Structures are given as structure tokens and as C-alpha cells.
Image (tube, rainbow, N blue to C red):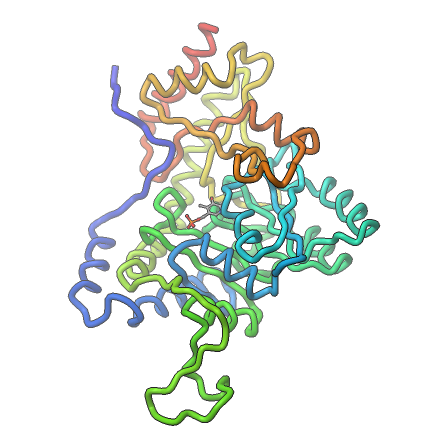
Length: 390
Ligand SMILES: *Cc1c(COP(=O)(O)O)cnc(C)c1O
């Protein structure tokens, strides 16, 4: 038996990626050179969006996106509980409060029904959110058209957390085009669809939001005279207009990102092929397989299955058996309100029944562009064996 470890996700780097990084290392600029604007332009063209702001992580983009939308103390931001903690932490960074909207039992994204009900309630109690952050879990878009309609009706802004969904589509448009949102956040962490090592991009069609994000990315400093409050007293002059950060991406990272972007569609196709193999090889087993929305083309960042009562094994035992067989399945995610840091906010798990069901049943199988059919067969054989013996 082959006992090599199979991770749940991993990057695909080739010689052209390595050459792109080496070229920057031999050039004049390691940061604040031409590679970052070139990556921003390439993503803008790919996503069909007007403005793109690169930063050192998607987490940084989530933070400056909230700041650009004016999130501050006294405001409330809503997101999905089944997400990486960064989707919620961004609101806390701004001194705002976070609340969660339970997930949909079929898509595992924020439930539209729960969102509608919670908005009605919030209007009555005068506690409407300033920003809602839908998360496209596993790379499959939320129903953005409906969320956009609700944002018009209730007056909130939308940040799409599309960290999983780079290379995906919704109703024919590329994720990141901001057709139904103010800002979209893309991540280039190595487990995601394409990578820059660490890195993220915020996309928007709104020039004022784009400019604010640019300022927050780099210390709040401007060198543009038209934005200054005083006349420059010399050619060295610059002004700090806001309390910004150093969230800049390096040229080394941006060059890797641009090189990876050339391969994005083939990466997503490879993930679809793997999802197809899993779909057909697992369909006879007592498991719930991912639901495919007819309105979305998933990037298949994750392939999430769920155990059922019929699976005949506990979630914990299933994880332990697969991991000891070298198959490094994972759980995306422990609901954020369960984190010790969030305990002080007093969330009640009974408010999120679907997120709780999901947490007890979900398993992310290995999924990445270079996963071979032999490896998929090994994963499926282990799962079949485990379920037959239980
Ligand atoms: C990965 C991820 C992030 C954070 O991305 P980084 O680039 O690692 O900061 C945020 N939200 C979700 C849903 C993610 O999966």
C-alpha cells in the first residue's frame, strides 16, 4: 500500500513561475516596482472590473475594505459562521460588532432565508448591519443577485469574501467583477486556486472606495497634490491623510501571482475533473456529496462531503481513520462563534442549527489541481473501506 501523505490542498508551481520570481530578484525593485501594478491590471482584466488593490493577504484586504466602507465602533457587520475567522475578525479590527447568519443546508453558504428573517428583525430593533460579508464557500458563489436586492432594500454594503472562488463564475460573470457587491476579496494563499505565496486583491468598480483602500494599504500617505491639504514645500513632500498600514504586496509575490494567473482556467478545469471523479466514485456510498448550483461555476477550492446517520461512523472516527491512512482530510470550518476568542460576545449555538449540523458532519477531501486519478482512487478506496467496516 502506498502510504505517501495526500494533503487536502497544495499549490502547483512550475518552471515559468520560478523564472518569473527570479526575474524580479535580478531587477531593480523587490517591492513598489512594476510587478504589483502589472498583477493588479492582469486581475482587473481577468475579472472584468475597474479597480484592483493588491495587499499582503486577503485578511488585510478584508480590513481595509471595511475601513473604506466606513465601518467603525457602533456598527455591525454580518457574515457566515462557516468561514475562516478572518471574514469576521475584519469587523472587530475596526471596533465594530460581528453577528452571524446561519447557513443553507444545501449550499453551506449564508442562507438567504435566514438573512431575510434576520434583516426584518434587525429593522424592528434598529440594529441593521452596515456591511454584510457573504462567503463563497468552497468556491461556489452565494446568490448575489438576491443579496444585492436586499442591500438596496435595507441599505447595507456588501463585501464578497471570494477567497475560495478565484476563477469561478456567477450567472456567467467572473467572480470579482463586483456586479452585485461594493468590494470583492480574493486570496492567493498557497492552498487557494492560484498563489503569490501570501497575498490578496480587493476589486471594486467604485473609484472612491478604490482610492481609500490604496491609502489604507500604505500608511494613509499620498503624493498626489490634488489630495493634499497644504501646498508642497519641496519635491520630497507627502502627506499622511489617514491612519493606514503597511499591507503592501512585494514585487516578488506579484510576479508569482501574475505567472500563476496565466494558468488559472486550467487549474479550475483540473479541479472540475477531480470533482467529477469523486462524484461518480462516491455516489453509491452513504454520504452527501456537494450540490452544484445551476447559477454558479465553482472554482472547486474544496470538495466537501457530509456524513449522514446512515454512514454508520462518527465524524471523529472517520477523520482519525483517514488521517492515519495518510489522507489529510480537513474541516472547513469550525463555526467562528465557537472560537474561544468569540466566547465573550455571548453567541448561542442554538441560533445556528445548520452550522452546527454541518460542523458535526463535514469533511473536506483532498482537492488540488495536481491531484492524480490514482490518488483520487486511493482516497475513494480508503473511504469505501472505512464505511464498509463500520
Ligand atoms: C484564506 C481565507 C481568508 C484569508 O486569506 P489570507 O490571504 O490567508 O489572508 C479569508 N477568508 C476565507 C474564506 C479564506 O478561506
